Image 1 (cartoon, one colour):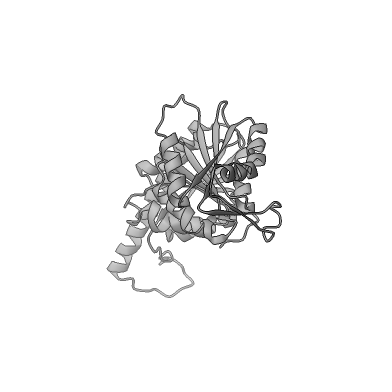
Image 2: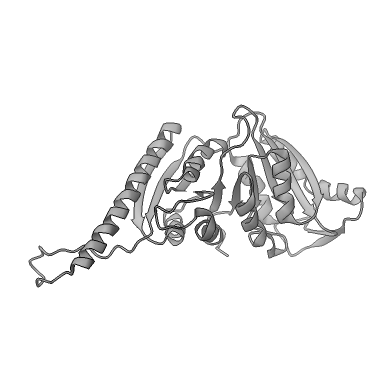
Length: 315
């Protein structure tokens, strides 16, 4: 597994590194810590090249170049420090680091694709040191939308360190939400980890009996508890899959707005992470990487992981 960790030296990015302990990650990891200076770094000034004519470089240009180089050096120092933190926490991982002068969001997305990362990790909030942008603002939201792999927006754990991990998975029986379940099943979780599969309906639920053929849709009208039990049965195979992976899994069916219900369920239950698929059974206008996953990532009280299969094209 390959993980790209975006680091800017803020408390939130330090919390993101600490949160890796609660992400169920395997022992064998290639981790790349990446820091960015949000500046333009022009080509290096080389006045000693015998093959070029001497040129006059204005003092203002020299100063701008020097400042940009200093920003990149600071970013490199941050990346090195963070990589040492990661290596200390996970001695078995292969950890490297690098720094660039570039627009943060696009650089993260591009590097993740070039490096073929499985997961990008960002903190919930950034700092002004590297360009004045908030990580969970234009940068992380753009990474959520554009990355070709899964993205984890990490936050500090609120509960006691010795308490079992709690995961909320947003499900709707779509291929993407099933990928979220599969991603959780393939991780290595501590004993007694608890999972709630949360299905959210309003007056009806669209579902497919064959997730490999999402065009074969059926509808269930949800008007009473009997209908709700019927909806719950749709997600029992996913719960069984999680139980087979050693997790304590239960299905919860709620009614309301998915943006609000996922957050409310995570907050009331004290979840450590919300896991969602990139989009849902109705496509990008409904679930999950449209307004829902971006709203959840921005407002959740805990970490949020948006799962994309690596073969999925970007939306």
